[in-house]
Length: 414
Image: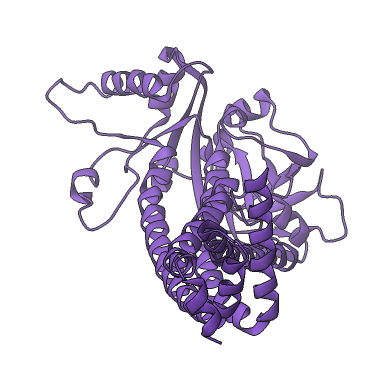
């Protein structure tokens, strides 16, 4: 109980000193504030980017494998010459996989056509991405409808001239009219609108949002275009309880069998997973996190040196008071606690100010730009831990010096 009373008494003395020197206290906080703001700000920016990326990848299908001619990736060492002569996935490949795959929940063939124009009466929408898909596409991608419905199996099989459009297209073609049942022009054909996708908003990845996409049955597109000229993809969704590695292993074996490749021949197809995208960017995020942490720590250390300097000045200014306290029986650790608490409090206040700035900016971004900034609790705790540690390091030497002062010499110093 005596120790607790002494601790709170030290606490009171420390905060009394901080209140008496408001300008000096505020200036001492700035270095720590900027450092913590930098660390948490960069961590939050990376977390937000990662969350948006994961959301975009989720739209592509987190349990999906894309069978394509080109493997995902790139960079200076991308061996494009190995892939340029590969065959595109075909309808035959698609049909064979549907018959033979046992670990797939859904298999769809997709063909994408970019920069197309859709027309309705005098209204045009340009640069539309038209996606021609087989019936199982709804099993691959989570499709939410603002109005209307998906294709029936009969419409898919017969290649009926129907279309589902994104919300942006619907607003452009039908600003004051219900789109369902209307006939639009696309790919040189007349198409009946049977559905409108729910608005998603833009994602980080290209062609991920359904807002500016028009979806038509694959068999309709086959009557209009040569699908091989538009980079077709076979998308396979793994069954629940089946790992992507198991599903990929089965698909590799089936595709090699369908293409009649010998054991010595390399694959003439690519099996792409959405995790490839996040894995490539995780390295970049890690570098940014490390750089931000180092910059922030340097700023915090500079602030710590400033606080240590202020603490030395504070010891000198209060030498006379320390002498009186010790002459009245104050122990060394009581004096030490005063200065340690003052130093730690300065750093924690600085850290809290940095967090306040980050949360304020996050709130403003949410209100103005609609961007939800992600700040994790463990990063907030890290900021408080760093602030406390810097406070202890900055204040320990001045506190020890103050605790060892001779009371008689200290009283005479005034």
